[in-house]
Image (tube, rainbow, N blue to C red; front, side):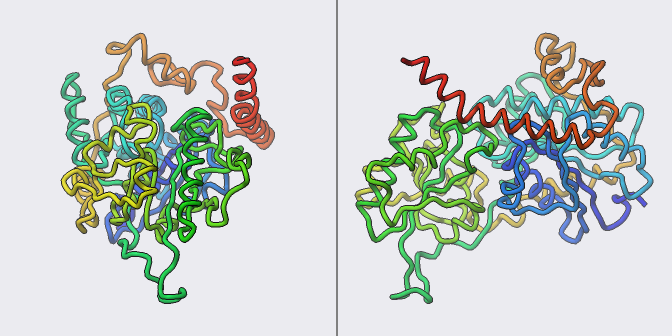
Amino acid sequence: MPASATNSLRVAVLADSDTRWKWGALTAKRLAPEDADIRLDGFLLRGRATPTARQLQEVGVRADSLREVTGLEFLRAMKEATEKDTGEDAYDVIVLSLVGGGVQAMLHGLRRAWTGRGKRPVVVTGYVGVVYEKLADGLLLRHGADLVLANSRQDADRFRAVYEGVGADASSVTEVALPFLGGRPYAGNEDPSAEQGRRPYTVVFAVQPSVPDNRRDRTYLLNRLVQHARLHPDREVLLKLRSKPGEHTTHIEELPYQKLVQRLPGGAPANFRLVYGNMGEVLDTTDLLVTISSTAALESLHRRIPTVVLTDLGIRETLGNHHFVGSGCLASWDQLDAGYEPAPDPEWVARQGVVADGSYATAFDAARTRIAKLVAAPELPPLAPYYTPVTAPGYLPGILARHHLGPDGAPLPGAPGADRQAGPVRQIVRRAARGAYRHGVQRVAPVIRRMGEL
């Protein structure tokens, strides 16, 4: 029997980075009915940011199966699974957790793959975190999925306004919340097992791979963090890192903080250290979360942990901290050094999908209901993206060609791996090429830029 006819749900998640795998996999689990037996198959889109085994372990989300694929390999797998829609291999839901161009390419490819089939999987997409740039571009590239998830009430309103403003169907927009919120609420630094019943007050600076994007500003932030540690020797000051040198996340990190730490004059103080690991576990012992504009700020606010979004480098769209205007969380290192703790604005927080009021358990109810109805439907209409060769003839072909697809969503002639699974030799070559690319981004490119500035 197909999965949809039993008390189970089979979901495929296609992701192109560690953070998008985390969002996609956790979203899939949140969308499943509470009493459903979910089978989760993970597909990692091969590219510059394909997560390493260490990164996947750090994310901590387990799948029943997980493998690397190209876009064409994924499309072939989804076509074959749909052709077996009377067996256990049929998917009920596909979650596309990719950059906008990747989502658009897969929507057109899936539409082509499912031509002539009334019964097909429900296709879901959305955003990993805060949407502070390329709103119209990213949204229209995601249009065509059955559900476009909005992580907050504010995002849902903005998404519908964009779609309606261009005459596109906005019914796919569905309000949910960030799927990785949770953890115990903040209750201070009491610890009965520690001396004097308290653990050290802990300040965590959550870094971002691409913000800021230059050595001067990143060095400034690191120096201020270290200065804060020296001014407050009774505090634990942690630099929370996203990846190790050579690894990539959703965004390219050309200047890893680890390398900047090695150049600190006089070294780092004893109460300063670098940490990796799952963000939720780090927040378990955090008393003050500091960042430029990371989604970690929303995780922290959800737990009611004092949270600061830095203004030292200005409040600018390029930094993303403009998103937090009105939050009550904006402050500078000078203020933090003096002991300032922010008080978030409850109304702002409520509009951001943080749901610190205890309603998080119901945040995905509307999406679950919609998916259940779509899965149970005898057939679904073909996917209908806003961008077509008619509406965007100068834009869409380039988007699709990057994934070896033609304007009609069919594989381009001679596209690599269009009709077969990659063999062992090709997989080894791909891994070597990806390693060379990462080496070039983090080691060669910065040297070339420095030479160009001489």
